[in-house]
Amino acid sequence: MIVGRIIGWLFFIIALVALGADIVASLAAREIDITSLGQQWFEINGASIGLAQAVIQRYILPELWDPIIVAVLLWPTWAVFGVIGLILIYAFRQRKWRRSGLRN
Image (cartoon, rainbow, N blue to C red; front, side, top):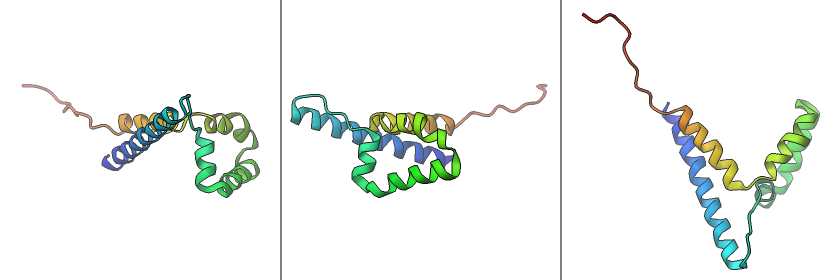
């Protein structure tokens, strides 16, 4: 499915951009400077992260937020987007279908 591959490649490109930004920031600071997904999300739209927490804890599953989602939000942005992108690219890859049937 082409849409899945396109979304996967977009996620992978976002991961490369985030990795490049971390490399540039690290070189400018002369120390390793890795931006977490939660920090990026807060910088883009800080109110939505609180809203997401409230919705997940109240309406979905309270235990999902603290051990799982908080851990993912602490990971580097490029790692999260890169892994999701690679999974989507692999899951929606073109497959060679073989015809089943009898040979003469």
